Image (cartoon, rainbow, N blue to C red):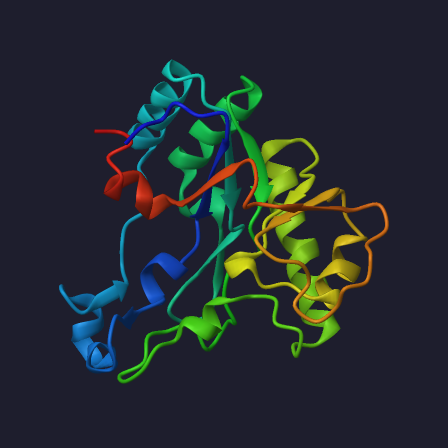
Length: 231
């Protein structure tokens, strides 16, 4: 993979249980039970969190190639029983590497939601895709949910990284006017996404929208393996 470009490399889904529980196939028949997790039917399915050593390799490659990077972290892992485990507790070694990289100016940390999903509807289905439920900020959810998830995710990330988190990357590029109202209660100054609010064109106050189709090379942590970035 050619890494010589001037774009910011943004890595999403770090700490998100979506990488385990969002499962669907390429074709209709591929949405049946175990086929969703099997080649060649698998479209999106289980893959593992990057290890601490792999993160060190990532930053080594980025530094060698003079790459600016951003990591969008989902603040809590949603367990099978719907309980939430904060990222620094679920992945303490990875969190420590990211914190060190942030302190050394090697990366920018962004908020990628609290759960990445609708809690309680996040587990794979016997038949069919559950992709819709791995988008956290649908407009039909109550304002209280948007506000709770935004405030809690900010609390977790800012407490651990010991500095304001000013960038929000909506999971699956889905966010709404209710999300914006919640963001106004935080230190968020920029929303980086491939699309604007899903239910409104109203201009935001004190928060800038940045279209990630310009100036960004957007990856999921899964792509670190598939695109041979650290090999």
